Image (tube, rainbow, N blue to C red; front, top):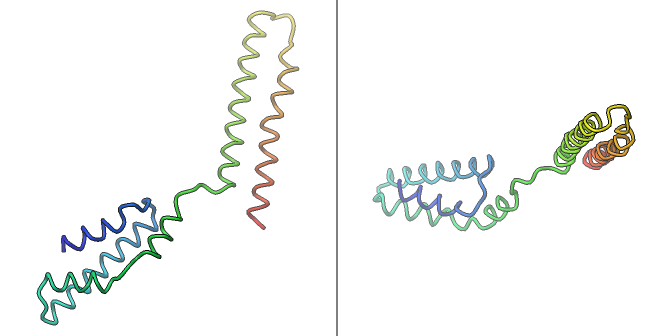
Length: 139
């Protein structure tokens, strides 16, 4: 049975590890082990049963292509919301830095309000981008 495990590991060597690929790998492994058990019960030697089961499994090119295409790509909506969160944190840090500079050097003049309005447009734009992407995903 070690030969079967090695064969299945070799089949899935260049496929990214996802839940789907792990599930398919286990299914193929269990199917091959069951086939070997059936062939051995019919009187074949273990080596012959393993070879016959592997030959009957055939070429998994289509399955491998499908699993390879299903690489883990975060959906557009997830990326858009991640960019929105990044813009919120980035804007808060920039405004915080400007506020620190304002309080440190010119505490009598509150000039930080003006660039803060400009900086707030970044997360606002990202929020509306998220809504647009989410609307595209829904349709």
